[in-house]
Image (cartoon, rainbow, N blue to C red; front, side, top):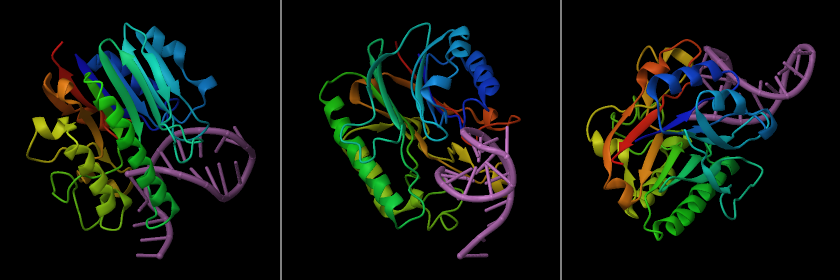
Length: 259
DNA sequence: ATGCCATTCTGGGAATGA
């Protein structure tokens, strides 16, 4: 089965692109971030017509996350993280889908840094790691995927230019340390496990011809618990989706798991 | 240091993003 994460950057502006992508790639589960719409205006009917059950945690104008499942209804486990430092942000939703636990993450960007937004990012990541530990002990297959807003390493495999990103919240030592804490706790970075070497970008800015120059970086991650990692078959990035008209600035990133 | 480009809500331009 195929599980994808896709920062859609506005589900209303991007709905035709989303429906095309679902039809073309047929993910069994799709985690969406930055839907940028309220609960009331989520396009549930169109998504249902495409053959997907859905749950969502919306917010007017900003943020917002959703979990879609082909031919079935995700069973909501929670919206928001426990003890979220600012519960007004809709950045986390978690569901049971079949035997899987799926957490859909939109981690705060954190710019500018230093400052309160960066502090909020780090606090949010700490909360996520705390929560991930409670999922870990379930010994179930868990996928914590989404836009982590962290470029894990300084390698050109993860960013086109460490220098250009040097002052960005995405590359700060504290951001990377939090990501490493998650890895060191035993969570598997699926894309890098399948593709240990070479660029694996998932985001290209709209500005300054970043897409045309392949000036991207890797910030969308699928982190797997041991039982899920044991079933990992493949992973990749739907780069072609980023190249379409009216594309999101992120590309869908996916894994396949043995059933 | 800022704009670059884009989305949202709104009906001009701010807020946000990464």
